Structure formats: structure tokens, C-alpha cells
Length: 248
Image 1 (cartoon, rainbow, N blue to C red):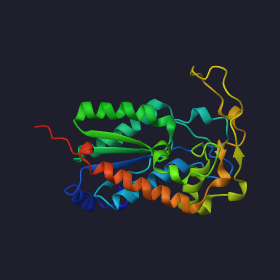
Image 2: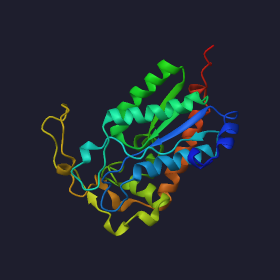
Image 3: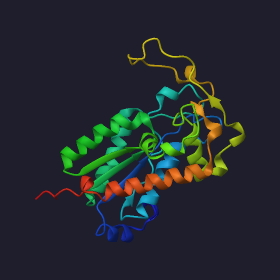
């Protein structure tokens, strides 16, 4: 299933009779180690959305490529939008789909910095439009699915680490520089880990990696995506995400 930007309006109109589900991928453009593309988050979520839509009828929205990445802005190339900008833009797209009859919206989000704002938006859309919304927090979503695949002893799900590298090797090997993959442990522990404070990401890692990127493998990335597709299909076809009653 292709994303809506590649559809004709006639085909879009016909598909409305087949599904009320929209898959909305979101990502980020930020440091992702010296070896991986900065758009890794969006690459992963777009792939998940497209593969799910091959299994169940759904619209795939255009990728929202840039998120709230201010915490990583010390690294060259990192792009960031303000939370209010991200929310307004995402809301407008969601409400466009709602206007054309969509009743279920699944945000497939690849960046942790977007998570709280999308949760708020999901609640607002449900309350204001009577639709059903949910969010997949991609890099956290996959963790319980792949326990048996873990090989690294250092933050296998850390930033640009074992699993981030594996997924990119599977999806876009032409944009990966495996000879640059490194193992980087966090630099020190906070004095008060129980208190949340603004922190410098670059002070934690000079490479942009947190974990062991050398443990990435293409075959592992393929299995990660396969399992993520299965779990997502299970969710969107379940009673937990059934279409709400249309308002009278």
C-alpha cells in the first residue's frame, strides 16, 4: 500500500469505503551516531506503516520527518521544531483525514521527544471528534518483542545502538557506514538520578551512540521489523482499537 501522496484522488476516494484507519509515521532528523542516517527514526516508522498497510486496509499518511529534538541540538545537523509547531501540524493532518471519514488514527512515532505531545494530541482528537487514537513509540515498542535477539551487554536499545543499527542495516544499508560503528558507554551517572533536569546529550556521548553499535546485524533488523508488523496488525485488528460509533 502506497502512502497517500502517491495516490490519485479517485483511488483515495475509493479506499475510503474500505477503511477508516490512518497510519501516521513521525520521525526526527538528529544525530544517530557517526554511522547511521540522521533520519533513522522516520525511516523505521515509514517502513512499519507501509508493511502494516500491506496486511490490513489502511491509509498511510506522509511522514512528518522532523520532531522536537532540542536535547540533541549540540550535534551538527540536528533539526528541531517547537512542540507547539509539531502539534499544530500533526493535528491539521489528522483532522484532514477525519474530514474525509477516518475514525481511527495510529501515530507511529520514532522519536522519544515527540511522545508526550502526541499523547496529548490523541486525547484532544478523541474528545473533540469522537475518533479513536493510539501511539506506537517505536524504539520502546520493539523492546519486549526482541528479548531473545539481544547480544550486546551495553544498552542494546540505546541510541543508535544494537537494534537501531540492525534496523537501518536492513532498511537502508546504502546509507549506513558500518566501518564507523562504535561502542560508547554513558559518561558518568547523575548525582541525583531521581530528579529530572535539563542535560547535555553530548556530555553523555561524544559519538552520538549510547550502547554498542558494532553488534548490529541486517538479519536481526529484518526480524525486528517482522515482529513489529505482526504486533501492530494484532493491535489494529483487535477489539481494543475497533472503530467508534459515528456521532448522529
